[in-house]
Length: 173
Image: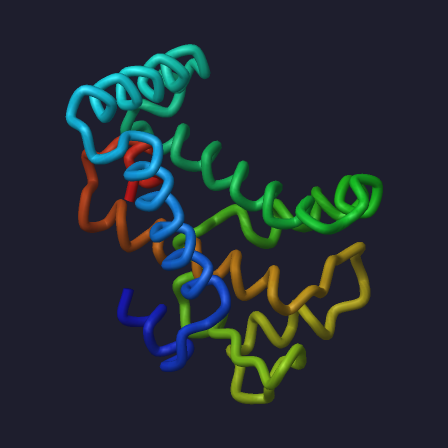
């Protein structure tokens, strides 16, 4: 987590969006339930029922293999968001090869610093190499790469602090 905080002292768009999303969820909760315990109970039961139907049991284990599968889902979702599927499909093998080990992304060699949308020279060695390497099909979207690295660091930090936690528990932070 410390490395994550060192990346930027200013809140980034993702941080602000997370805070805004949390506030929206609170507003929806209170509007939907009118602050009445019976309505809150019914809404909670409905959400639990929907979650059960979603077959979330796959993610309710602390097995490292399942954590890796969840991590790969994060990677794919981040890259598919806003890009044509064909572009991502072509780059996916390289993306997984590069970003599959979320613990490795905690290294200072993956520190990413941006000036606007441009990578700065004080970024880590491996992140600079990634952006400079033209030998493979890559998506060189600085914000997506920064998001991957930030989430990888949160993911690694969470499971380091909670080694027995399920993969699903990370999503409920």
